Image 1: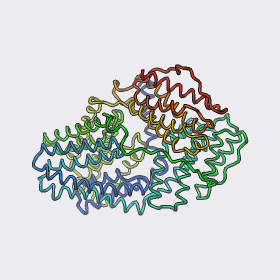
Image 2: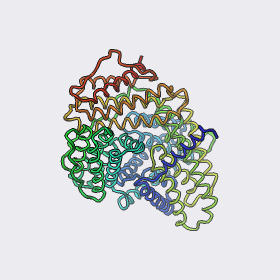
Image 3: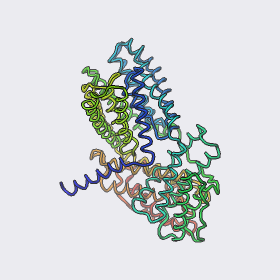
Amino acid sequence: MTKAAESRVIRLVRLMAEELAPFPGRLATAWRVSVLTALVAAAAMILQTPEVAVSCYLVIFVMKADSSATIVLAVTLTLLITLIIAVATVLTVLSIGSPGLRLLLMATVSFVMLFIGAASKLGSTGGVVALLVADILSLIYTAPGGEVITSGLRFAWELVALPMMMIVAFSVLLGRSTVSILRDKLLHRLVAAKNQLASPSEADSQALRDLLRQGNEDALSKLKLVRSFHLVSNKQASQIADDVLASYQLLLAASALTPEDKHEDLLALSSHVGDVVEAIGVGRRPPAPPILSPTASAAAATARQALSVLASEEHGAYLPGSTSPFFARDALSNPEYVRFALKTTAAAMTCYILYAGINWAGIHTAMITCYVVSLRTTGETIHKLGLRILGCLIGAAMGLFSIIFVIPHMHSIGHLMLLICAGTFIAAWISNGSERSSYAGIQVGLAFFLSVLQGFAPGIDLELARDRTVGILLGNTVMYLVATRIWPVGTESALRSNLSKALKGLASLASISVPARQRAVTYAADVGQSAGAMARSFELFLLEPAHLRPSASAERNIRLISEDAEGLNREIYLSRSDFPGLAERLNELADGAGRARGMTTVSTRADGAEMAPTSGDQSGNSIEARVRRIEGVIGAANL
């Protein structure tokens, strides 16, 4: 093995170890999912509801770390399937005797829902609706019309409603509190800030950067659930909201503090954050922050202000973030939304026509796969295809092992529940990892359930497991060909879109006056989240065909300006100066980033104009240098 190949293997092993490593809350979620899945399997077999494997799969798909989000999703899915079945009933009656009309209705509903999902905040839910309607209508192919109408649609509701009702009950009784999850997130941020303020290693700095790139969207969504379910008093909810924003403010400040700052200030802040972690850990009110030296830096002063909010010494009075409409502003003008809906629908209908034409209903998972893995960019789609194939193979191997060596020795439903619990635990552990690998865990569970749960007893039919695996592989193949050959969308397109969003956020941040800028944490968090999306895009470049990837020089320059955008976020937020004209320049760059192709050349600003801060803030020079670099790259790309 060459050194290069050996190095790649080492990196792969290290990455796998990181993805499978335990973290706070992972074990708690995994055991809850595995226990509930075993209970759902037992209940479905006792009540003889159809497609037990699908009911178990829905548990992994719906069950989240916090109980409030799980309950909302379960209730929403139950209402959604009720509405879908009502619509599907009408469509079934219309197309019961006409295969051509049925195919047309499937394709029409699929296109409309995929388009709405892509062009609005509905997102992946649009694809779920399209999948469910298409799958229900496809039942007509395998069963007589009367049976489908009187029994099939009712069974479709039951296989969803049973696990959803059990999920709600389980979450109420044994689910993790959303408040405790927010507290754990707060402690995680505080520990990262403490490590950065002490003597940070490269790993510490990267961990803090990753937290900044997560933004506040997830935490604020959980806060909405806390308020909706009245889990705490209004006063406590307001303090939690302040804590979320103050902790992000502390992370921003900590990322800007360097050894050049006064040693006694860094030492005092680091020690105090440790005291705050200890106090919150035991449920006590955090102590008041220390007094800093008169010459403390702006970053140190900002860190102290955040700690004052955490100690309830002052109310954060943070500014609300910007809002966006339900539909994207370019929903009717951007052809990518239409192309995405057409491509996914074409792939799904191709699979349907193929397995219906050769009369091989066992591979109907091919059509499902097309809806499940299809994403806006080719890199994202290929990444999900790879995770689905890997998860499918692992789950099928687990199922095959169980059928040959375990199931023949099982004598009761209790034995089956233990088998389901063990297999689900592996799947749930993987699915509760990062975005890099979590989808593979869901597929491990699906393939495992499809293999060992056949009808109302443990599965022993290897042919059925084979057919469903073949269907998944076929759907992956068709979707890969469509994604890479028909209107392929490179990951660079998504990266430019997120860069444009980040620059617009920076423009909004720069337009806020100095006294109010400290309270604009939400704006900075939104920019940080866009930076995180850009960082994930870089990981997808290598998965794309060569003709879609940017050149090496273009990739270097895109990385350069994305890092500059991330640096601008910190520097503008912490600056105590106004920068005339900066917001206008950043808005122009945001518009240019959306049009840019092949960002290959770095140049300096042609007019050589200097932009000086209105006061003696040394960050102005760094801000100007970063803006010029971005102008050079985007300007050259638009020539």
